[in-house]
Length: 173
Image 1 (spheres, helix red, strand yellow):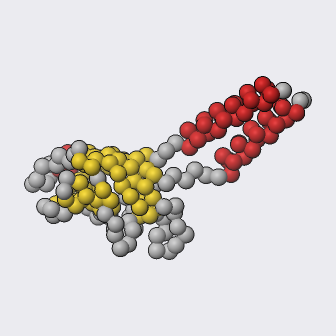
Image 2: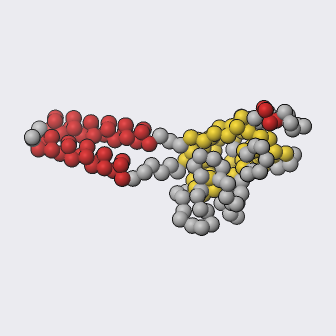
Image 3: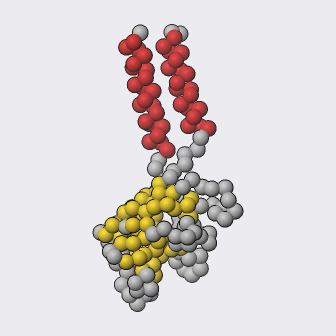
């Protein structure tokens, strides 16, 4: 086995080891929501809001105050076509990576279309996720979904980099 092959084998093993030993930790999550028309039928006001964007978070702290949530630091996206802007709060809202946090840290509050809104989770009642409009003091049931960046894209990027290194090594020898 040549020195170049040994170097390449070590790079491959190092990359595989890194991806197996360090779990993926997303610091941003994509979200989208639409009105839940089934539950909206029981409300007196129409449910027409929709949105999407990205929530950026700090890493999950090891704290009893925030036992299972990423602390939200910003939100970017649109609500009904209007840009969202995160509203900083005294206690940062938390987010568990797949849903709004069930913890006591509060809703994710933002402004859009010149007014204040929140993504809220209620643990009681028939529906959990709501969009709260501070102007009208109304809550709209929504279908809220979150997705995190795929760790497989990081793996594919590393494989590509290893391939480039391998090509460079072969050309230099």
